Image 1 (cartoon, helix red, strand yellow):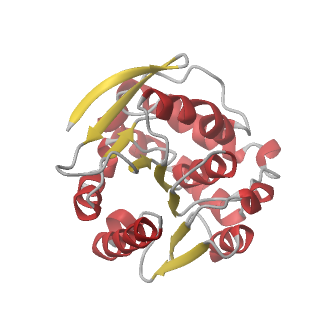
Image 2 (image 1 turned 60 degrees about the horizontal axis):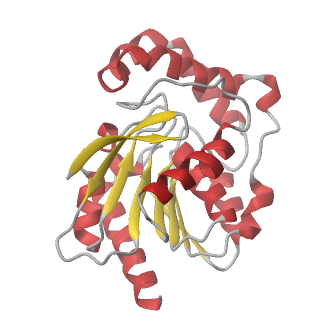
Length: 257
């Protein structure tokens, strides 16, 4: 395991590389965290999946998160597209990763979908990704804002003095009236790589319409995986089931490659 910061565009990004003995040079698992996430908040999940699948992995903090530099741009409704089409391609180029398997949670899942619509990708796996804005999502964000003080205190362990700015950027963007019509559904038919779309049945940040419309939009290359008794964070709330499903999916697509 190696950790360090890379200069990607104007951002200093903390990157963790997980090397698995005997792993092939390609493909590489690339983990994309959620809206308030970081490398540390994935806990041991990336290493467990890397070892189980026999593939090297990369986990990184987006700008404004974890041990990366602070947010440099004001958020707007294109922030997920900007990450997927500007920052992520540059990071992968610097790391010489040509055919990633993208594994994204929440915002990270959406970033994976957008990236795969424009770039060659071995496969994508998403947990709790959003393709459009729902009232259930906004309701949960409003509830998070009502608990802002407690949440910031908890999140500060991971994000330090960037925490409040990060929280406000997330909440203010999603709750802005101009964000209500945000959608990336038009891009879904452009995704041609295998896709595993995962959602907990008790996800408080998105209804089953998210998973169903993502799978339908991508078409026959996409498969869905519902997890019972699970909320918004399957890799913590249903870790064993998720490791088993993801590893089987990765094995299948690797055999077919």
